[in-house]
Length: 110
Image (cartoon, rainbow, N blue to C red; front, side, top):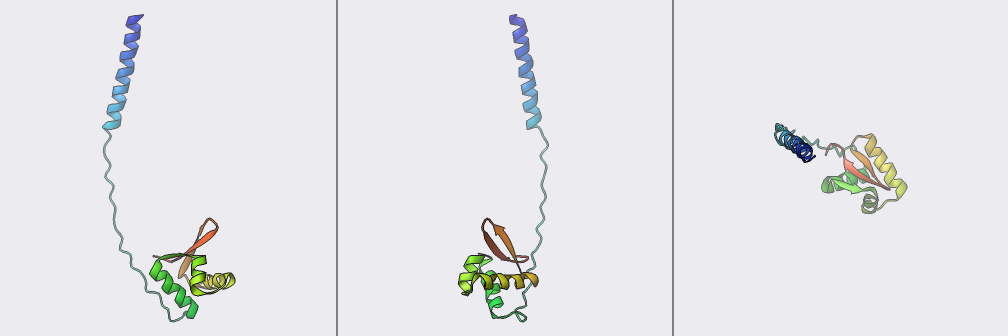
């Protein structure tokens, strides 16, 4: 019995050692990353109204803003900010991202 147990122990040990060697001897894959230069388009503020321009300037300064914070900074109500952001989204200037119960407003391609 003792010989059989030591043979099983030896077999298990060899299998474990082979597994460890196989895991550690994997070829390392080299990940090549390429940086793509971001060409930020200059947003034409000429065809925007006053509140739209203010919103874009705030977003250029802060990159991303909660819709509620933008509403406070511009001094307009919920309906007004929704309509304003709808117009800017239609012009492909901003996008709204849903975060729980809030929207985060960001400039498109930034």
